[in-house]
Image (cartoon, rainbow, N blue to C red; front, top):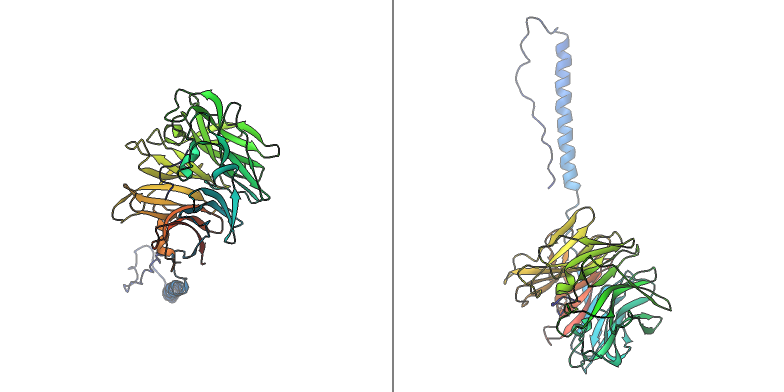
Length: 438
């Protein structure tokens, strides 16, 4: 399950001036003694002096008030690759470990870990391709993702992972979710009868999430997909143990996309369909305390996909558009328990006009990163939403970096961002790391 566009003033109160008018005339009943007139004059002077002091203090405060901070600037650097023409950063944790993929000269992709910009090839489970595709927030040395094995796919399924690989070897092999730990990669189990699996996230409680097939031949499956798949949580061992997460009533398949250290999990619930979203993402859901809760409502019955959850339980993702069943236009959102769904808009003032927005990462400060695009996907920009409905183009804050920041996939609590950029001199897609200057 994936998205079709992963390629890529203070106001000071006024002081009322003293009127110069005479005191109120004597009343027939309440005459003012002449001795009190001096006290009244003194009182008037004190009020005037106090007003002047207040005005002076406010002006002084305004003069010493620090100027509003400009938007954050970033030092952006290109992360090293395996020599091919496509790399991407998809995850960054609070240790500044970035993870994603890099293509080799023969076009196969491998899952990659960058630590202090040093590349580690995580390898595969025997097949040609592997990748880290979602945000992995574990800080205890665990990375999860997907990998092809050396075993042929018996049912001809392209599975969810084919989109994350390069041709010609993107199909034809069984795929498993993997765990990489202490320099070793191991495959995660599927449900009985199932062939393929997919791991997306891991927390610091020894839990990983994703989805895995079972042995049910589901008539709601479409295209090359044959078997049902269920949202999954693995208790990491070894031995690793697999657990199914409940679906929304009436649904047959689903996927988990992210987990936090409270054990809260987000993902999708729907029908089998293509196993890459669409009708599989009829419902955006939150799993906690053994139950499933629908997040929404959304206007469409497809592509409603949470992508990340922080430790506060705030969720971001993208929702489908009623006019685009195949996900050509999507709409970013942020969900909190207090405020419910809030739309995250695309960039304003772009030509061609941006109508598509997708949110992929959130940190504890509530900063959200993702992408903004026009309808034809000819102009896409990496963006950050800083607690507002409209985002900022990260390309406006990249300093002298020559690459075009196309997509922001994740952000950690230091504000460090990773994603995918375009090298305008070669046309290659390159992984980048953006570190806040301040």
